[in-house]
Length: 96
Image 1: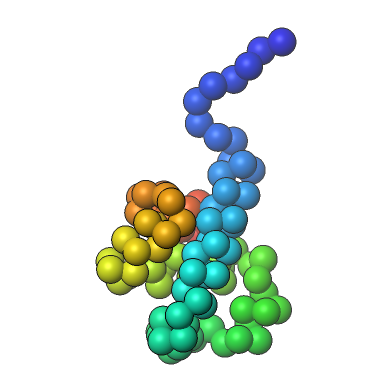
Image 2: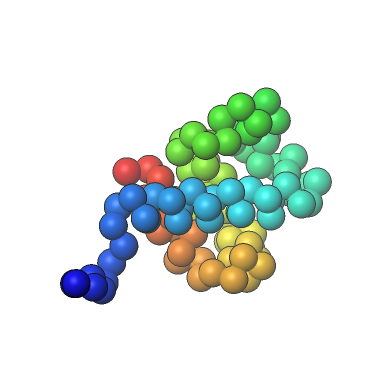
């Protein structure tokens, strides 16, 4: 049996990116002011978030929202116990 080491397969990366984006969305929505800013800046609505939660574009928009505001990016990364670069990489994976 061969055990492969190294980078994740594209499918694993996408699943990881989606999971991270969902966790980030939960973090954003945990603060009313931040949630309102997400909706205002992205054009997303509560209905879109509910109906298209698995849509890669919606998930990418959530991560882009964090990336565009460094204090939120750093705080989210800290809370989610990932590096800010992991959030950026997840965004890149979702937009491919």
